[in-house]
Amino acid sequence: MTNRPFRWDLVRPDQVGTLLDNAQEPRLWFLPALTEATAKVLARCGNGELHFVGRSLDSMHDLLGGALERTSWHDRVHQLPMSLKPRRDFTGRDTALLREHLAAAGITPYRLARGTRPTVFVDLVHEGETFTELYLQLRRWIVEDREAWPVIRRKLRFLGVTPRRLSWRWRDDAGWPAELPAAAVRNVSLDRDVWYYFGDHQPKLTPSFPRQRWTNESVRTPDRGQATRSALAEAFALVDAGRQARTREQLVRTVTREPAMAESWLRTLVTELRY
View 1: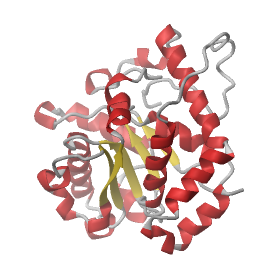
View 2: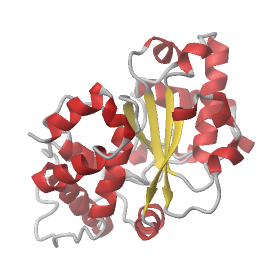
View 3: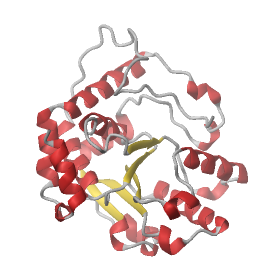
């Protein structure tokens, strides 16, 4: 079994027990901005499988868990909880472990070449270092396995959620996005206060999972401290918010303003979100 941090199933919460007894109701002050950004991620994903990298956008993952629960997209949202940094000291063992985690998420060169949907990575982006590392590691793996890069390059997408009014273009600085089709690497802007809350201040439900901990089995043990309880309460509230008609209607209003509404797959999803 691949080692990964424990996380409660928020859609089918049979593991929580009394953990949230007497918990204060969280204040989802960021929900309108999050819902808008979430809708744009859906519209710009190209009808793909969504993989949320790291922990920064756990809240978007959880909101979608509720919103998509009764749609045909209920199994299209995944977490890839690994923390990636530039590969100055990336060892052969690190590479092997990364590939093991990607394979456990259904991401291998073989599957990328033969899959019917795009594989879409989503993360908060500042300078794009995580996406750069992930792309370079995937590209190297594809070459080693001699899979068809011209086919795979049309099935990879990277959606970077950036702080609104970002003053630089991380995609141009990174260089590698030029190797993919123009629509494969895109941004979704998010209010700066919300972006920094998710990236720097929000209590997280799982521990950070950098390379140094990829083999540390202690991450499988759930933490039950106060910070985790607060994060769990907020996560459950987001799933519930996603189930609410008013949230789904906001998703629909934003999605319908996107150019991708011309495509049948998105119109079908909008219809499902309305019921």
